[in-house]
Image (cartoon, rainbow, N blue to C red; front, side, top):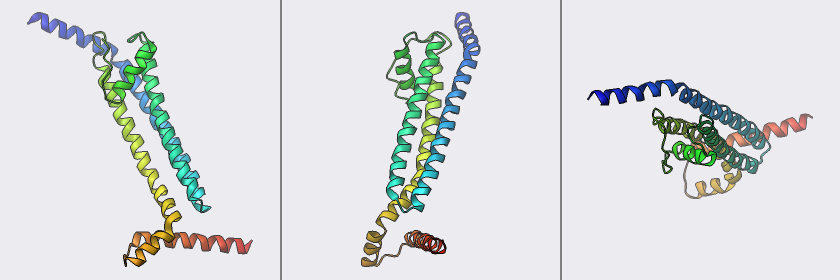
Length: 196
């Protein structure tokens, strides 16, 4: 019993000694995600609103898919960051193996098994937790961006949708309000052009 307690205490001390690394790396991974996702979101919002104001729904579609590619690239960059961090503190000697391990933990798949030193057995959980938060942030960003994507889709297909709704005698107030706002924008634009 005493040997078990001593082993447990040694592992706990090792954990407490190395915990600051995990906290710092987690903070940096989260900061990279938040900063980059915010930049992607702002860029998408501005470019898509410009495309909508010019009645160019294809510009919104292009911006949406480009933003998704950037969101994936950010996740890959954070996985590489975790791999470099694990390699830098000599937890995993091979850089490729460190990145594979980080990716396995980050995506919570857990298919790469690495023998970690005592006190570091918690690091896969820390990496997985940062990955879960990152995926949640990216998903929230995509859902936020989908509102403008839907507006662009309705703008592109407004005539077809209106014809089907009228033929089937279906009233959709949300579609009508979007369609009305599109008409109002077109009227304001033509009034502005006439004044110039």
